[in-house]
Image 1 (cartoon, helix red, strand yellow):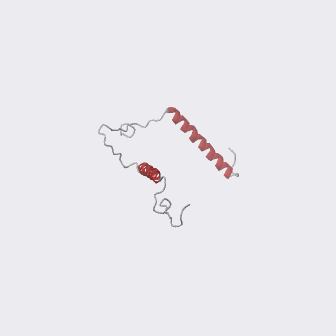
Image 2 (spheres, one colour):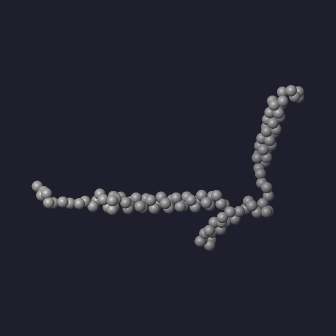
Image 3 (tube, helix red, strand yellow):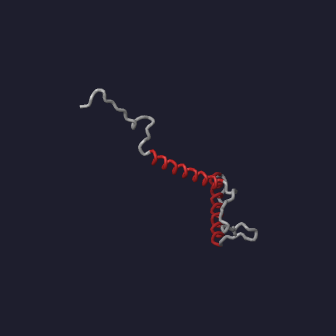
Length: 108
């Protein structure tokens, strides 16, 4: 057997002992914080479109053909016709609502 004078201390369960998997948790935490930082930057970029985009590639460029002064207003004919139909429906509904709100008004 073991004598009464034999004693031992475990350093694996103490508060200063490194936890199992601490390295993996630290790497996962660092990856999560990097994702959070990237999402925050994306939110700032989305909320403030007036802030320009910075790039280090000199061959990268872009051009907006829709906002230049020579670009005319462009709408397709079917969009114009559909808008006219929607406005006519809205006018008819407005007249119907006015007639409903005033029952004393004669029927035309």
